[in-house]
Length: 219
Image (cartoon, rainbow, N blue to C red; front, top):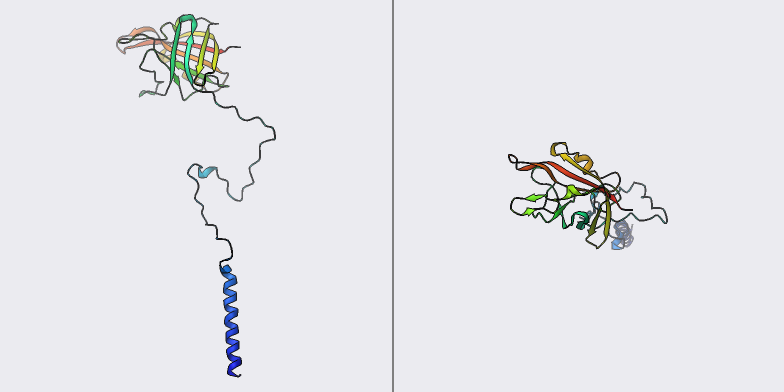
């Protein structure tokens, strides 16, 4: 074969190889490849992201009402028949695992791990002192004097005012307090007011009973 023809053949084969290589890598014209593992945003837990093979999430029915927003937190409670009015603060549990109570005897605690006043279900629990050795008479000192039918008003932080009518007034031994019922998050909406009652035990330095008032939304 003449040298000129052989040179042309080699050159032609080289161009074909280059063309094949450019075609296989895209020659920089194809989109950048997506990484195999895309970082999940910190605000979105990985568990809530469906895998690519999952069926798409069903859309809510057209015209479906939005889920009701949670009521604002309670800010003040008033019991007119015993002239009790006090600010309300959110509380949790104390070192014994019991519901905490504000140190100020003029302040009422709302159990923040339970229902809120104005919720559609469950017991919203408010607790206050009956008295204190140093501070004197507490805001719930006369809670045991309320009667069924009395009005209890709760004002929320957004200015909403809720009315409740007392249904029951009970005095229960501390060791017999039905905590599961009083702090239930299910069932009809209700307001539960709790304070100390009964005799004072000087050994344990606490009262032997609790006064429990249950009220339901006023109609």
